Image 1: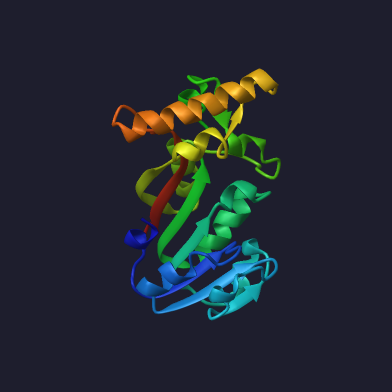
Image 2 (image 1 turned 120 degrees about the horizontal axis):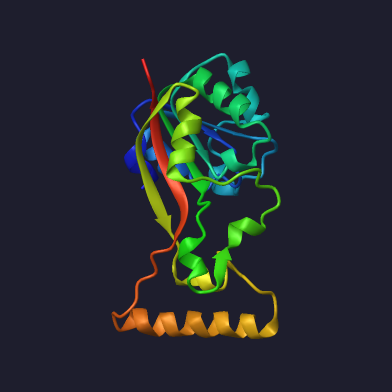
Length: 204
């Protein structure tokens, strides 16, 4: 899905982590520079150029990129506007971001909540409207926002229990097992939106 949003040209990946998206980006782009505070990339990503720096300081690179990719990063930035202003300074054609879904209404029907709410390093979470508003403030027009769905593992990994006790834990395991069975026979499909993947472009 990431590959379909990329355009030809150079790519800058911010907050690259272990570098797992490098190969996908490299298939579509002519050049890739990965950025993070420290180099924690897996060996297979070491082939790509890397710079250790704060993602909010990328204008110091002194160059622009057709693609800027920031997956699972925006929610961690202490100053959302400072970061997006820095991105706007280096992005010439396509910005791709992913952010956690702020809406709990789907998992709440099962007495659960998104696991990402437990991540205390998150400064904020997003709806499509709030994400579009943040990007628009910095001169980006949203092209598409796609939901990223949990898999059945949502019931023991990407979701957390609404009540932290043994009975609730056992209930969640039971739900997970039943859903595995119901999906196998075509009675169930997990459509809980965990994250939003967004493609945007600079205006003008």
